[in-house]
Length: 346
Image 1 (cartoon, rainbow, N blue to C red):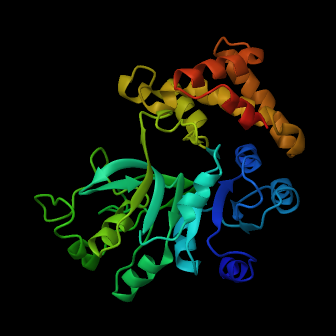
Image 2 (cartoon, helix red, strand yellow):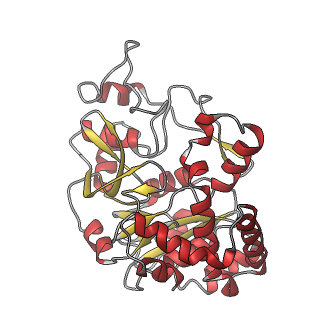
Image 3 (cartoon, rainbow, N blue to C red):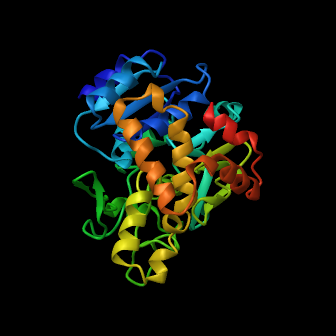
């Protein structure tokens, strides 16, 4: 495969970080990259990018870059990486802004864990579930699990592949179904339902990305560890905004989610309470600031996007010129110092 060949020929692939993005999100990647010293080994992965976006990643990012011509989602890219990587590897979301780079060295320091993470999401049996926004994976647990016949896939899992509607662009993507051997391997580790199956994590009707892999690995003696007590909760607030690292969350989907809910379900209080809807004004203004910091170096389409975002800010009754001051106030209410916004602006 092209990706396997790219990985084999990659200089310095040993314990590198990888960052994945699709078309229209280059400004987020550019801002995240600006915060990372070149001493941090980082590889860019793109999918279904426009020609100008590919050119930017290849010639202006300063990092090794691989492009997937077929549109795939982040779960598929991460799972493919787990099949290919020969040494431990890290994963950084494009909306994860590392304000304290030594955190990355701490995260990639070799250890016995299957996954080391900064953020956790929910609880799965005895273990907190690692979030992929900033995480590091050791390959030895993957190898050992697969030697025993366990698939050890990083992808989301559910008992019915038709249970969720997930897409990468126009392409539908599917969860995996837990294998019988893996289900049996988790006996005694996970709570089980009355139907004789491991229960989904609290608040979910499926096993989110990484959670089933963690459960199987934990059951076989390969636990995960959070190096920080940062819990992702309540959307774009709480532990996602810290003095060391920020995870914005939902940057690829929040505008579509907001438009769909406000257009098709304006009276549905449950949908309007979704984090990507509730925090839409903050997310929109943060994106406009992030884009403004790099739009002049990006393809022409991003200047069109800059004008579009400014129009969306005005539609909220806000003056785009006041966006930076409003964001400083918002971040301050979360305990984040004002200079953080300056870091994002470069």
